[in-house]
Image 1 (cartoon, helix red, strand yellow):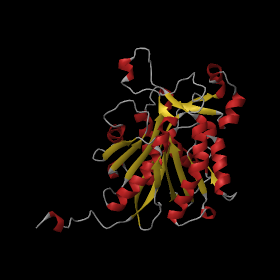
Image 2 (cartoon, helix red, strand yellow; image 1 turned 135 degrees about the vertical axis):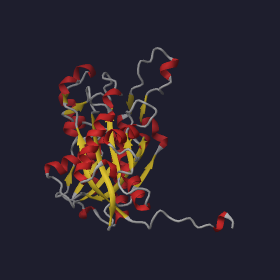
Image 3 (cartoon, helix red, strand yellow; image 1 turned 90 degrees about the vertical axis):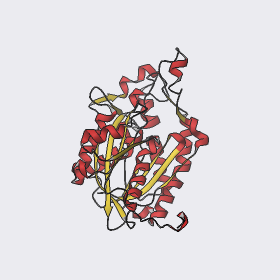
Image 4 (tube, helix red, strand yellow; image 1 turned 120 degrees about the vertical axis):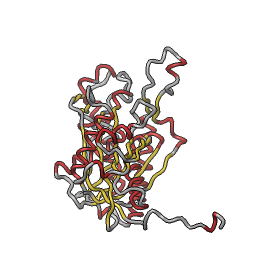
Length: 337
């Protein structure tokens, strides 16, 4: 029999997936704009007007990428009513784990007790968590995993030049996590994702890591960002991604209860709401104000807060949208747990 005649057995018939629980960890140290302005020759008023940010959380001792991920993961597991040994796959989205290998996901899996889970990191910047949800839903649907832990985490304070007027005030630290599992009905819509590599230099690490070996003048390869370029891309291109996510899920903006875009900038969020013509009753996440831009942690942190405060409820229909360096993006419609 030739290999062309062999029919391999699928893992199982395709099934649906759902979000089972969210968890979040926010560092204890709160940093207001007043602690930042002198080094970037700015003001509290300028930062608020330009970004909407009033304060952000900055990680300290005992709040590493692995620490914060583990704290958020344990909360997500508790919310889902599961123990760590039920997790088959850990997907950890981050761009600030400063070890090339092993993956932070593997270390977190061991830390929380998911000792038999497959584990890998996702490098998709601010779109990373939504990428992870899409991959998790597909893994559950195909039978590759029963339960998947998706984590978005960043310690951006390690990667930011505190004297860079374009980035120093924007970023914060934190971690958010969610558990994805099987469902009798579809409760996670198809992911709409992509990347525009032609604009990869819009948000990037200034130099590669090996530049530290080649040039003694380089002390650390911090992040850089072309703010206006990113703003235009987000405001003009991302609403179309959001509309496509609604379309492939078979719903409209009028059906939504919650909108959770990446918390990049309050002006971007407000512009998206106008372009999407969202009904006034739709709850819009604005975690940016007191958390800053936490890249891959942004969406799960914002969802967790809405659920914790009662602004969003179990069963609500939510549109998640992540976008950032790459320029990568991902969106999906989900039913909140």
